[in-house]
Length: 559
Image 1 (tube, rainbow, N blue to C red):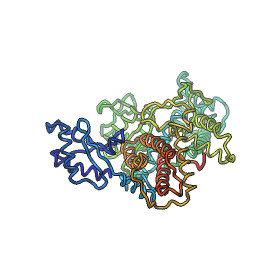
Image 2: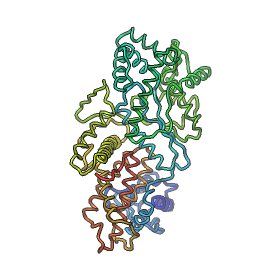
Image 3: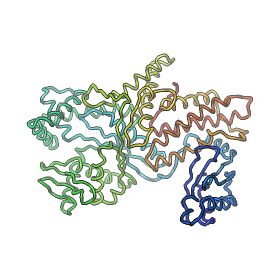
Image 4: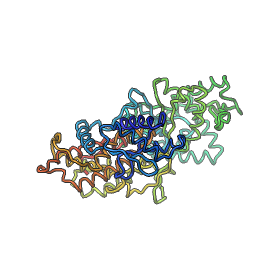
């Protein structure tokens, strides 16, 4: 529908004197103003030295000469907007058509045939999986699903720092502690101790630097033993969290595996003048390219995060040479770092650099302003998920569910509350959240969307088989019009890497369905429009299910 109307408006605008116009269609906030609106006349009136309203009238005259079948009318409004009304019959017929193939409704093909890698979460062994990793996972998983829903083959990747100073700090503290526990909480405490000593004790710092070198070289059997055990327990711990969050990675990359490739690249392009030697270290002189200088190989000859990132990028494209995009999701604090990496990549391999995309997010803060942790100076994902699960458990404790179903529902609803909280606003800013509001079954929340979907599914269960309606309404509700917009919402979210458009859409859609449910008798054998309303309910339930899936949120069978 959008493409047909856009093409007709292009032809009409051209005939009205606007050569090769760009048409932007929008939906008026007030439904009484029509189903679509365009400001094409206002965009080009100044260049054509015409009054916008006069130009809009000329476009409408030409447009009305050959109206697309679904268009009822077009008229000029305000200073030169063109409002377009679609026939109610068209919406009703589309709903019936969609109800027959509802399972795939919303899927688009703009990425058909493409291969896209999305790297996200990236927790480091020997450290806690904290709420920053939870944010990156939620955002990365949703973007992965949006791209998948747009037709691409998605490779989900996770890059983990299994070597580096953070590991050395932890192992140093373990040696000082005189014992070792293959336990994530213990490793987290040791990391906090090692980090503090690294900053305040020069002797400890020197010892940690020495351990770091031995880890990288694997030259000390005692260090290797602790390292291997700690790495194993960390990765198992991460896997348990991924399962709870609904993420399954296709490829795990590790710093220890890409470091050598990074060193090789830096040394190769040092010869070509892309890198320089400064005070015994090899640096990328970022100022030459509008960025800042960063060290890629330190004075000890060890690769820094920057060199490893080059090795990682080269490895990605070596394994998946057809990647249309290589997207990386990190916290905002990595912005300056990635600007330098991409600037270096533009000199090393411009083609690969053009396919790299960095998406960054803010941090998650409670509305109370208080963030405490059992495990040191960071709040773990486990703690935050546990807090949400406890709140949901209070709401469901009196429900008639067996213990297994109750646990599943509590998990699904808690994760929905968290993910909705993270995805509801544009990626990039910090997020202030209220746990009580996040798990509310009413209003602006993930559980509210789940509840609306479960209600619709319960209606369909009572209805039994959905039959093709013989009667269509003369006038449709706002619900049908909103439902048909789902594919365009997916497309916008894909083009802008913006899951919040889907969150906003589903929240509005759920509210409109609840109003529709309150004002219409859906199940009524005596009403000839009941089969049609059941079809509308089916499309709504599937749209919500598909939209929530794209956000990484499950729909429980009951709530």
